[in-house]
Image (cartoon, rainbow, N blue to C red; front, top):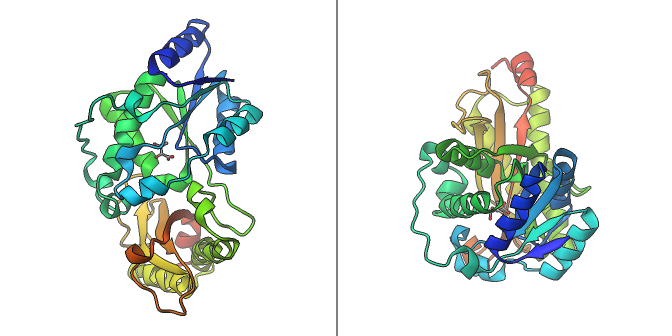
Length: 308
Ligand code: PAF
């Protein structure tokens, strides 16, 4: 496995593989690797000849400077894991290497950039687009592998590809979860075992909502369903829901009727803190850990069972 810090060196190295007609699979990451990243590397290995993984904590996608400062950085451990997982090339540039000057680009993704993470984390997707476009230009992959936990990010990256005509195929990989149901995330490193156990209530609630839909135990009022999900998550004293949204799986349009025929996804952002016996300060004050998760609603269940 080669570890490369310079973009020119990376472009040359990958150019050599391309001349040998090798296909390039790319896994962009911000490091602090876990089994979720491993699933992306495995999918890339299955699909492509050469696997390139980038590790870069991208400052332009953090809307909160404190969040950037404390984001976990474990490069030596990451290199070791990537070697074990059979990665061919690690791209680990410095901030100066990626942003020699301030990147002034402003991307307009229209509606899909304005809801959920776009609304709650201003500038986040602009920063994601900056780094992903730069990485695509440097790596020139045939396929890029993204995890479905960041579902809205995938929709944004697909739009970026369409707008700038990148010749890269996006491969969407399923969310990897702990046995408890908690979606794997680099941010889980900040959680105590107790917090992790309580955070698993997020997925358990999403699953219960979907099961209730399947069993016709909810009515078709979307707002009532969203409120039920938020209330159910918030019943756990460690958790504080930021948003619950139910959106069209392709267009991200907000669903107003559960019975329409589109594929739908429930998306949530939740703060995990400590049990303060219900005496929460604001999430901002307490610097709780913010997690996101999502689940697909199975349409056939809705069509067959919802009558209201
Ligand atoms: O999903 C992530 O880890 C990041 O947003 C990405 C795609 C590596 C860009 O920094």
